[in-house]
Length: 265
Image 1 (cartoon, rainbow, N blue to C red):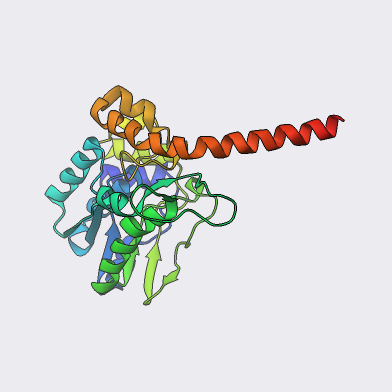
Image 2 (cartoon, one colour):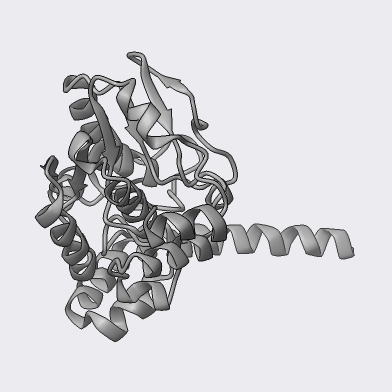
């Protein structure tokens, strides 16, 4: 048993999966690898267990990774025997379909259209550029076991739980289901894995550096400090969304003020 094995068994929550048994029962085992801390921890669990040569890693690059996340991806790609790199073009998709936003303004009668200059729901962009192409490739390759770094405390509700059977008969395993963010960092440090600088400022890594949605990720301050060129482009991309939202916000504010006046009267 290696020191890393001992650390996992004694100092961290159980990984919830017998990695070797799951892999031996599968014909085409795989793991989704984003470059973030959680999927990186799964990669190192497989590596430390001597199982990485049995598992294909699938990475989807949206075309807008933070440079430091790209370094993590390149680091793993250098030692992973089976690595599938899927290249996307999220910025091109946005040019053709519209920019994602947490608040999609409309005129109250119909949602805004799509196309250049439009604003679209954030999930539309994520689905087209991240979820769908990754899923289509994994399914096309006949993967029957998929490891993901999803943690229960990171989401209000797991979209699919550990042990779920996904469409096509694919078995989903979540080794880190019961881990906390601090457990992930402790494990990565224990095996000497690289930890991106952004995790000194936040606990989540964005899939797209300049995404104009997911405002809770607070990317502006980080980009301003460490990537001024990316920040300038991010600010430019946010400007038309702000211009579209401000009239809606003003209308809501005015309606609310009118309601308060009537209540006071």
